[in-house]
Length: 124
Image (cartoon, rainbow, N blue to C red; front, side):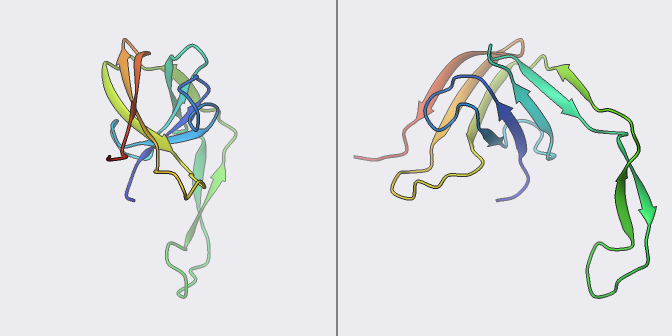
């Protein structure tokens, strides 16, 4: 599926979206984390500076070894986003194989959801 951003959603978007983890490629798609509060305000969750890398013995049989990521005691930052534009979001997991994968278009104005449009992918 590629790279995407994650939105932890507490805003009432509709069935299949509320209080769920959502994904979007509408932001920077750098695997960032965001939170949509119950009033529809968007926040960025910034974990930078919260972990350090420690060198470990190299294991040639597994890729990405030689370092491990350890918490350093610093806290992350949650800051409001002043986002103007649209974002297409979809649930991170969808187990209803009988139904099409849902998508929603969120229209943001000054970091707050103004309009929610459900995208109907059923033809007929």
